[in-house]
Amino acid sequence: MKTYLVTGGAGFIGTNFVYYMLKRYKDIRLINVDALTYAGNMENLTDIKDDQRHIFVQADICDSEAIEKLFEKYDIDYVVNFAAESHVDRSITNPEIFVQTNVQGTLNLLNLAKKHWMVEDDVYKEGVKFLQVSTDEVYGSLQDTGYFTETTPLCPHSPYSASKTAADCFVQAYHDTYKLPVNITRCSNNYGPYQFPEKLIPLIINNTLHHKQLPVYGDGMNIRDWLYVEDHCKAIDMVINGGRIGEVYNVGGHNERPNIFIVKTIIAYIKENVDDSVSEALIQYVEDRKGHDRRYGIDPSKIKEDLGWYPETKFEDGICLTIQWYLDHKKWMEHITSGAYMEYYQAMYEKKAEDA
Ligand code: NAD
Ligand code: DAU
Image 1 (cartoon, rainbow, N blue to C red):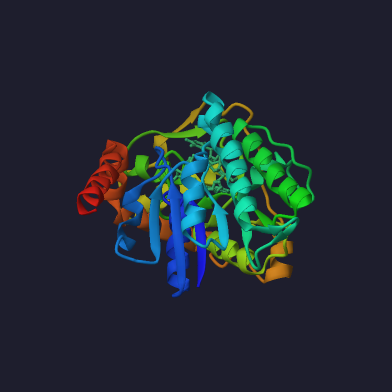
Image 2 (tube, rainbow, N blue to C red; image 1 turned 45 degrees about the vertical axis):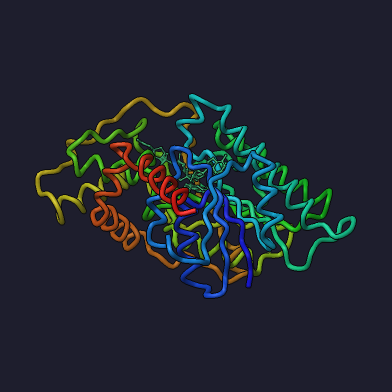
């Protein structure tokens, strides 16, 4: 049985990963460490609250003592580091916390993994691995043609992507200097269930349902390469279990769409299936994001050739599944927009303390 330390497992991708892994592997233990910032939501994990294979611990990845206790208590085979400040707009107004969590937090995890996994100089326990979940944003922005490959020079523009780049450099440095067994995955924009509604797709779904304005930055022609979150989770699983040590793997879906196309697709779906009265009149072009990267596009050839991974979900299917998920989970969304999701996890902890 393998034990995974999954950080950020109450956030969007982390939650999906936890569900994916519990479904895929019977014999597994997931230690899910999450600080429960505004982006962490215990309500995401209600379906597995009685699953003994999943152990949730509220802790900050920057807190060496708290994380060290987990390395001491559990025989950890893999660290999968999702925990991060993830929203570009927030990084523009408040960069400091991005350095703290994304850089300092990652460094802290690397130090603890090295300390607890090293058996002698440059030699580590059999089979252990540190997987850093990174982003295509570390490569910067593309013109109209070409794709990011693993050898594209790192050229981040936002404080968010700068912090993720710094973290990647530390992960690589711990491999190059101390031979720590690592992989880095760099993924394009994910979409799917449980995404916090500050991000484009859930924001537009929620606003359309409530007849609120739909803010489109700049001319709406910035391009993102959308990947269904379950395909991303599968890629991470494959890299943990088969990725060559020290390698970077790009993960993307050849699903490039301009933002305005995404917005119009969501409006059309809701108009056809839910509410005939919504229309494109809700779209409002607003001031552009500062330093807004124009285009991302991933070349996923390496992960396909090495591990056989490919994006299984077509955008046309994935976007319908996604919109339908938010329609089926209106309470989940309401708990976030009202702030009640915060109380939800507090109540859960109070109950745990009572039970203890
Ligand atoms: P998210 O914001 O939804 O979730 C982040 C989670 O990390 C939250 O649960 C939050 O509580 C937790 N967290 C934040 N600071 C923490 C800390 N100091 N200690 C412990 N936990 C902390 O983010 P996401 O979209 O799920 O992204 C997960 C990872 O994937 C991030 O590293 C992000 O950079 C990367 N990524 C995201 C995308 C995407 O499209 N969402 C694409 C590529 C890469
Ligand atoms: O590319 C991977 C990255 O994708 C991840 O590393 C980040 O963690 C994740 O947040 C995401 O970053 P983006 O900035 O691309 O995602 P966001 O949903 O914020 O924006 C998607 C695009 O939509 C982007 O071009 C900005 C635009 N946008 C966004 C919002 C929130 C709008 O036009 N209006 C909006 O209201």
